[in-house]
Image (cartoon, rainbow, N blue to C red; front, side, top):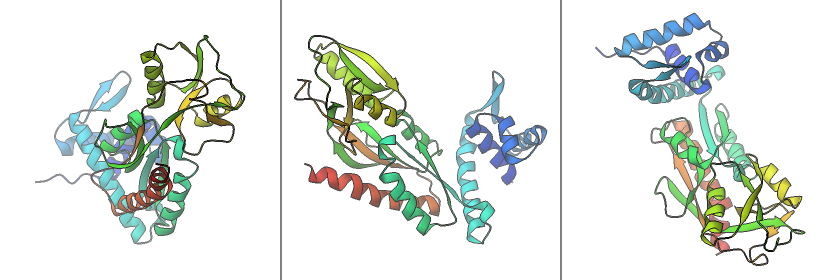
Length: 294
């Protein structure tokens, strides 16, 4: 006889894994830690195999646990969407969108506005993500839709949106440091833009130094605007405080970068609506301007 997994237990499993702590899951769900432990034990009894193993002071999913976790996210999303459809706003469907900070000022608000109009009872969770993690998050079911940068020609994942040129950027007042090391303002490692900049300079045997590193795109723009160094990005929504200095500073040409739209294979109706909206928005705000720019 097939197991009928308990919905509350599945929710406890998902929340605990996503928070990285079942103690925090208990607090968020308004239950005691012992109640959460009982629910996890119940899931293992229903699955008839271990779903977790101890790792240090915490629990991590086994291979069977990872498989159940993927289904649990889909089951909970469908349950919450069904609850919302019959007027239970407390069970509003949750969909998750991931994208780089580069698209927070145009793509994100446009998607948010259109999605809230079409799905007013749904909960949209937006995550700023690093490119190296976004594809993995979609594949694992932790994100429903994501927009990500890829090295040109390196992936066939998702749908190709645009190929964007990369440029060397600095403040208007920034001057080439001559024979001195090129001061760089970059994201923390790992970062595709950082990797591209360093590999390009190393191939040309040009000297460089890290002048500033940050996980924040606004922080990067502020440092560049203050004349703290040079960075590499696309031309998408550049602030007025920076400009392309590649030719003026005699810096080497950079390879282009791809933007791709990723989506989870198992989608709820709300996630499908999010994908349709995101596809239209990225076409209008990224693909068409990139094609017009040649």
